[in-house]
Image 1 (tube, rainbow, N blue to C red):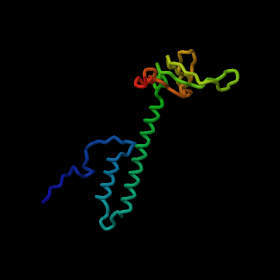
Image 2: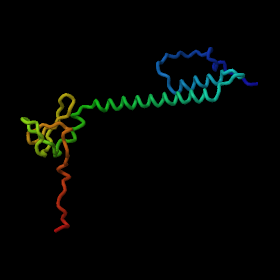
Image 3: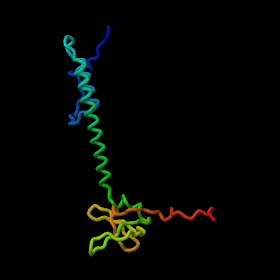
Image 4: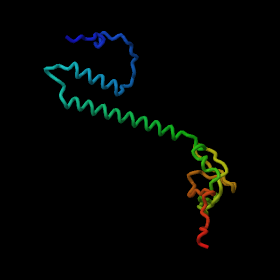
Length: 155
């Protein structure tokens, strides 16, 4: 004869539980298992109902993961532009100059970045030639330490 542990019954549970607004994977599986254990043997749950509930849970879990990913993306976007572009200090950048009087594009200019600042959430590169340009106006970045030197074997 098998002895039944009374602590397995829900009405004999003595542990307190604080309600949560989130239904996690563990809670969903407990509910599903309780449904399966307590179903009417003469009218059991149909396979399609079970599959539908599993699909709903899977979809919910994917949406929660997507939400976490979006939250992570937003947090990354909130990182200061100064920090994001600080690696540009010491690099040479090429950018399109503009004539302030006519607002016409000018020549492509090149100068070394000496500092990075921020204005209205945009990174501004302060250059050795005295110019200040938005980081998104840069068309080319050159690391002066990595500049190509003429091949000595050509001599």
